[in-house]
Image (cartoon, rainbow, N blue to C red; front, top):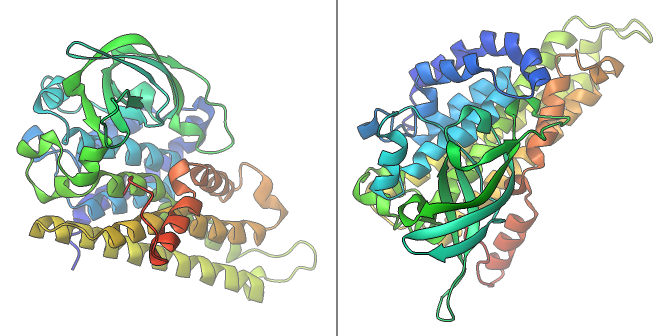
Length: 391
């Protein structure tokens, strides 16, 4: 039985009318409205994965992802920002205690955006690092006070592997470049972040390998099972989870329009057409299957963490692949609904159009490309070594 907090998910559903009402204006503005951020904080939704010691919910991850899906049914952009910004509270719990106090000491509701692509230039110095670079796709960054940025640290000849880290910077240490002009997920405000030779103390960095081996410094402060889940397992779901709600929102829009729709070509009732019935049934089946896998995987992850057991590598590989396939499955379902909706669906004002555009935008994220995770799993099944450490 999943430890799903239905009351929290209901709070997310309660925001749907306001999100729908703001969706067009938010898309035009190309950023999440301040009112939406305030509501996500006031309802506690953005802090579901934050440690309880800082006033967070420290909730079962399934609650977080079901809340994300509920938000996506009304506004996919809101759900996208909610997913990536909300999961950062969980990652900060893995950092050194000093970094957690830096962010939450004065403001427990402080928010963090991110761009994990390892494009930064890093120079080790006494006490930390000098960091420079430009990072793209930092969703919600204009509504956040801190940012996580990815980069590789230089390593010596005896290093066992690359030292990829997340660097934590306050808003004063970076600029935001307004470049977000896109066809989908417009209201996410996923701008570029620019850093020009700033100092980042050692305690404001987190090693990806510490997250992989579940040996992060924050475990001493936050020993709960939620923070014993491997880093990659939660993050990849934060960028695929919105697709579940996108597919549901698209299906709801299709059904509402289709129940009374009459074909202009011959005056027939669309609901009586076999093709119209089949795409609706297929979308409903995909949503059901994706949700079942989500529940199974999150329950399994928490089960291993609660028992203090190591999660088998084969299962981590399978779960990573499963997350990468979510958006492909949902995009296919939305495409079917879009095609069956006729010529009117190409208008931006059509209720299905935004879901279609946003589904394809979500698919463009690196973590939602199933090619490499599927090749990795296939190779492991054939006796080859694992090549993915973002598990």
